[in-house]
Every structure is written in structure tokens, then in C-alpha cells.
Amino acid sequence: MPRVLVLNGPNLNRLGSREPDIYGNGTLDDLRAALVTESRFEIDLRQTNDESELIGWLHEAVDTRTPVILNPAAFTHYSYGLRDAAALLTSTGLLLIEVHISNPHAREEFRHTSVISGVATGVIAGFGFDSYHLALDLIRRRLG
Ligand code: DQA
Image (cartoon, rainbow, N blue to C red; front, side):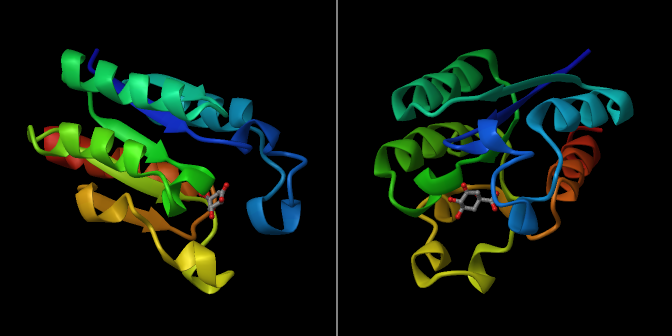
């Protein structure tokens, strides 16, 4: 079964209790269970608060030729290191879909900038956990 890496950045381990009015009540475990149930891909969902670990996972995706769904969380807005790692993937033709639970453009100004979007294959934002499901649908459509 083809694998998809679903990578999540800082503070997303707090989903469920973190600002539920913005991010909803679901936890990352809930998300993993929902994605696994509906997918014909092997779902490898991970979360870290550590930028270097996240960059390492993107390098792993390059080396194993694995498509990535990435919620970079706050790193979205300033991590050039993460951007360069994302570019490693997409420059070799691998899919990298940037996702956000909320719509950052409808929030504070600093969230309007993504340093990742310019090197992502595409971006899905504002649909809660459905952002991840839509990204998975896209990978299914692209990879057949
Ligand atoms: C987020 C949006 C970011 O601005 C924020 O820092 C997050 C979550 C989202 O999924 O809506 O941590 O990426």
C-alpha cells in the first residue's frame, strides 16, 4: 500500500483543547483514525514541536519518494529552513500539500504570510480536519 506522510508542526499535539473555537474539538488521534478509515494509503501521521525534526522528516520523504501533507503550524509564517526542505521535495516532482485547519488569511496579519506556499504543490486552508481529507483526495487523484 502506498504511504502518505501527514506531518504536523508545533502545538498541534494540543488539538482538542487548544482554542477549540478556532481548531475544533478533535484531537490528532481522532484525525489519524478518520484518515486511516477512509484511505487506501498507509497513513503515517506525525507531530513535532521541533523544527529540526520536521525538516528531517521532509528529508526522509525525499529519500523514500513519499508524498506529504504538511501542516507547518506556526513554522508556516517564518521558517526558511522548513521552506528549503519543502522545496527539496517539490523540485523532484513529489507532491507536498500545505494544509491548515483554520483560514490564516482571515486571522491576524502575521498569519497572512506563508513562506511554505511558494514551494508547495498547493494549499488547502480553512476547512477544519476536512483540509486533510481534501489533501488526501488530491493525492489519490494525482497518483491514481
Ligand atoms: C494553523 C494556522 C497557523 O497560523 C497556526 O500557527 C497553527 C495552526 C492551522 O492549521 O490553522 O498552529 O497551521
